[in-house]
Length: 484
Image 1 (cartoon, rainbow, N blue to C red):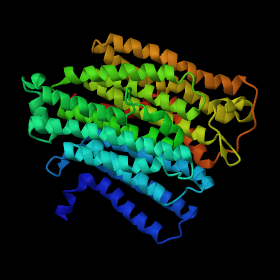
Image 2: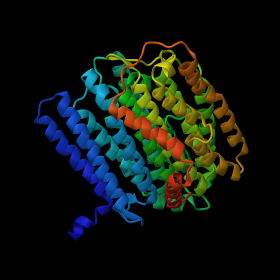
Image 3: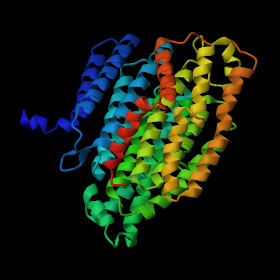
Image 4: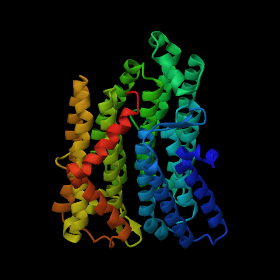
């Protein structure tokens, strides 16, 4: 029993792994139909809730396993709760859509479970090998999910693009990791950090080149410019619930991995990696602001929106301080809620069995379905950063540390990009409330309504200290466990 308890920090991951294997056997020995898929989906959500409960019940101290390759601290717990929340809600959003399309197979929630295990490993990685194992476990499942609608050419194309470009980015990250290992002699973050903090690290060209290649691979995973090419096509081509999943949990995990790697393995090379984060942040904010203006497909618009929001989040990371890291974590929590609520609205854009993706089809929605129009309008206002909604406070939490760190140009560009980006969010509101109404959408399902309501409550309630305060406090405790 004592031997078993030594693995207690990894119990959430082990629970999900055992659950995935059991659900796979359950699906294999039952009829392959939508009912089996839905049943396994609900079981997967229950397993994620149980894993979240185990994380909440863990003591607040730092634990490490497997010779330091797997670490569980406040940062890992915070990110894992976001990942589990995003994954569970993504499954909840998928039931009606996938059942209508005949795609609600038992493999779908199992793939999300396996991907979630990989994401949780990523944010607990404290070694280059465990980092790569978690990243690939996540990515391989995502490639399959992107192409799961095999009869749809766009879905197959998006899966192929994601696979090819994802393989390229993984190769770059692995090459960077091999350089870091070659010039430090270790794969452990603690050993790499000691060398990175030495006086000669800034002149170690091999180590810095390895760091840059690793950042390139991670920038692809968070869809930051100039490694964003896959995002619009994959978002548009993948089934909409899969797109919602891509926009939520994997984004959290990749940002968490980047923060973990920079904070734990390269704490002495801030001057070097901050230059890369600077450039990537500015490029992402500006491209996200301008490229989304001409989009008529709402999923492509959300893809460019996500690129812009990654740029905003990186502003806090560029500050290189604990306050900046806290701001990034708060931003991610708020972005997760806004994104899931928005995709719930997108999934509700349905006439009969046909999904509607054109923004123009939202015309006059306020006259046909005022509650849905109100929810989507508030989410658009929040994504645009209009006070007092949660999206405004998210930007405050990342811009203020940048200002305190003297990064005035970065903060100013962020504010300008926010103003430009507000155009395409407000355009959707204008279409819903002021254009001539189109044909009504189908009634909203209970699952979608629950997610919409929860997201709406969150973006309004975050400004209340009693509700937003615990999230900010948890983010502060998580940031302190990093070396930033």
